Length: 345
Image: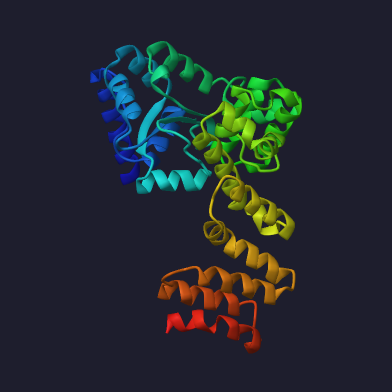
């Protein structure tokens, strides 16, 4: 009973605020309550994910707070809420729904049962009344929102812009499998002579997350050509980001040693020093060696890496000892790393 009374009070407060506000009436209590109100009103939910210190977010705040037409449009159609990307509530939302915020603000729209309907970052060029109304319409249109993309892809839609949008959306919801499928389809449609076009380089920067993608392979095999066309820092950052995304995804646990060697080589190609590369691959490479029944080689890799570390932290030494002993019980083999283990004492 008390919970129902509380929701009723929140509902009345929201209705009063709707009548008084110039712009969008954002629920001020919690995201949970926003969805509870949405169920009562049978409305979808608009959630803006913003970041403190983001000037784009500040600009949108002015529009959301002061544009009466935008406010009326959204208040009629949605229950609205704002969440800071790094707040406990923001982190919980991202973790629960596997959302990767590529830029802020990110506009998200949900049905009343917390199923994602549409997700889209926005910049100052989208900060206008016409676009925000169009965005609202698209979000609740089951033929146009991002929730519809998977179905269109499975139906065989392969237009370039659609594949890019679908791949980008998959990246934002951490759907690696379908991002790879969409971007492989896209890459196969590109003529080899156009692989290094500005649009394809932008796709590499913003959408591709797999180092097996043909567009990525073209970059690492033709770095000189890309350096001639684009800023070297941008090219190197693109290569590094895709390699690291591929390294830290769940698929990496099953990478063969040959692939790991290729990935390390690609980082070395863009000038990352050997010690830094070794540190990034230390656990994934040695785990693969242990699984391949090559403990001596794994121990050798660990020994070589830590010889290049100036100061070994006690907690790091404790972790390495526990990690290695989880695979190796032979004291003769372990003796080679005893000098590291001693740092934990």
